[in-house]
Image (spheres, one colour):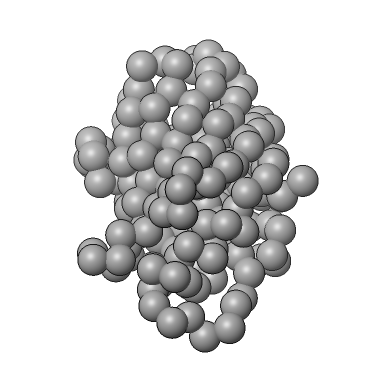
Amino acid sequence: MNMWRIATLGTLLVTASLIASPAPVTAASSASTRLQSLVGSWSCTSKGTMGTTTSTSTASMVGDKFVKFAGTVPAAGKRPAHTSEGFLGYDATKQQWVYLEVNTLGEYSVAKSNAAPTAMTQTWVDAYPVDPNDGPSTLRFTSPTSYTLDAAWKENGKAMSSHSVCTKQ
């Protein structure tokens, strides 16, 4: 995923398994508990090929199956600052996390992870549109209120990378 998606993903999506809970009855109930733990304000500092940026988001529940993230992404490289909205949920039938995002630049994307609801390390890939220049992103939960996100991609033929540290406020 490219830098703007990484910053947004890092801010908006990624803490689906932050807090350990008692043995889950089902994957869906475990995922719901994880989603509820995301509610609140988040800040991510991303360092990489395009410099250093800080993005923010606010997460709120939509029913009991999705978390809505509304956030701001600062300008980076040639990309202007923008806002985005994303929805994170767990598809118990496919046993995967899914994230849909749209932004004020008119862009959209869907990403997925086959990680278990309680996984402390997750690999996220494009689901739609699939971009062969986007490598997978690796998410690592470091505490109940923080995680890191590492990504690599190509932009105009140039190798790009980003390391994000995200903290719940």
